Length: 466
View 1 (cartoon, rainbow, N blue to C red):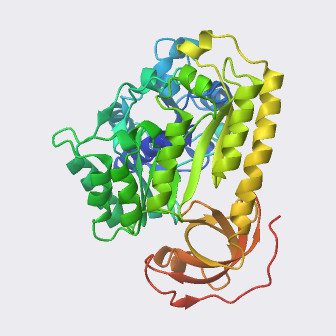
View 2: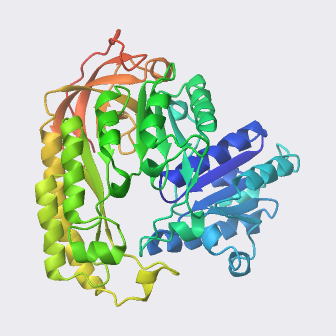
View 3: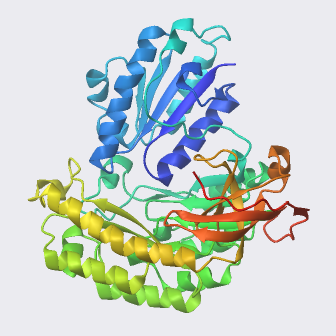
């Protein structure tokens, strides 16, 4: 069978796009493989939100040149945000690419895969190709025993807010909301395929408006949550501007929602927020969090933070530290500002890189302390978590995710792959906490989120991860 290898950079939007590519490929007769040397088609789904992602993507194209040299029949394809940004120059810069597909070209890419399929036969792979091993990288969307348990469903593409640091509106376009009926059909198909958790994905997902009826995001959540067979529902990523009391009420009243709310604040300084064009003040952000807490007091609050944005002073940075101390985020994704070609902020005077690095380390010290304290508070409890598969650091142990997005790792004697496919909800007693998550002991497994755990697991002695 022809093989396709997909390597994904970037956010959940890109991951959702990669799932679409994988589905189109398998329906055309491909096998999704985890080794590029075993593939007839290699796809890099790229990101351009930060300079590091862009450099990594071009680096991977260079590494895959060895495979093309060993076997010219291999198709090397680049898609995603970087492909959209550089579509006019990418094939000149990387002449051995077989295709460049922008963010609006996924259907065309799927059609190309179907057209190429008959060009490959089972004996196409040359021996010389297996001598090539491109370094780095990691396959995403590889079909395994647990892939079907989670589904990402795009509800919206693009963004119309034009934050001064963000390239997304330029590479994904302005808001384009999908019809509610299309979203529901895709969720129903994922549930029928065995999905236990659905993540609704959009660049500014809570700005969703149904094109025909004007249904807002709170109404979309209620409609999807009511679908038979859905265990857990979550969404990414929200914007403070569009967080309303109506949405807060929905968060507190829809039981299928995972108890985690991700609301990027980016910075704790009003002058910096204005330069970022974030469309809210710090006071407005905190007032929205207060409303959120009224309706969902037990939920985890997570965020995004940028340090060293052009013009950020020490006082601005200290305001961000103070915000984090007040908010006590359960998790935060932290970045040093990275200029993106074509955005307004890229033309502004940068903060020195050594200052940015020092600020990121100082911010991480504050945030990580609160994250660790959040995890410490779980020790001794039994949580229900959806299995992900073997731990990457220790394949003898299982990794799973709780509803509030905490990674838990534990032993599971007596639960093989077949049993976990049928009963993927694990009851885990948490024994030790870390910044990255928790170690624990798996006590049982259930078929559905609300079911009891009919399968008991023998309790091995606790062992810290390698």
